[in-house]
Length: 284
Image (cartoon, rainbow, N blue to C red; front, side):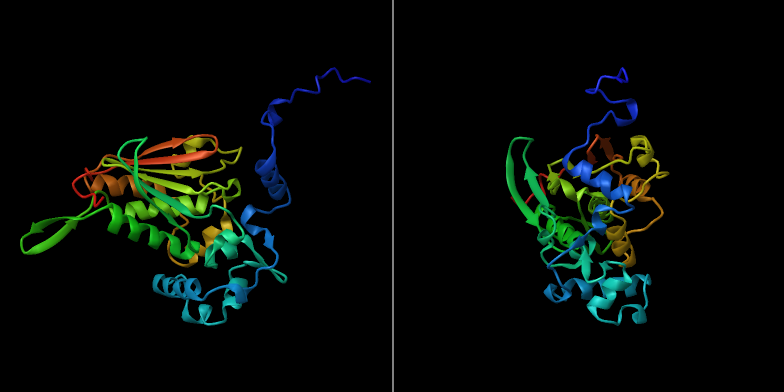
């Protein structure tokens, strides 16, 4: 017997047609898994360089998130302690956080940086591909040595390098993008630098029960990749108190810059920082 419903239509709760990556994500969530918790075959701990593990240990101890005793075991034991293994398999988060070539499990996990004269004219660019434990440091170092140049000013006998925007604010934004990125889309994080602004574009997925505006208040901000977030938290690079938006706002105001602008689209999160004119500091 016909139900009287048009089979080509969907009710309000299923109005958005799911396919591809979105459908995969829905299935994972249904079974209590997140994208970064999926096991990866054919990658072993012996395939990893030790660099990212050494960096993690130093950061975790320095931040007092972990003790020397917590991290003194082998690299494999550290991955197990961080819940980044499942039986004999490593999870995607383990590869992204610690492997020297995270694209082994996730294409376009790198970050693109470009210097633009305007929206059409790209002057030069970089691609930063590294373990997520190390990537924020490399991105910030690249931007502040190649894309920004400190203008020297004096306070008494003290020499001060004044950059177009605060380093800690940009680092916070980069880490937020790394943690919340939807890695399943195959698109890298983009950082576009102009003479008067820095714009970060990041693929994201907003949970259906969260209003986009609530993300800007700090009230609702669940990490899309909780295992990646935990690794960066244990290394002392991020917090879990949902203060990121407010820290970026206050950091800009304290540095006499306008508040950043946020744009939240269905699958993209964009943040725009208005910076001190970088034209005089551009090395290009």
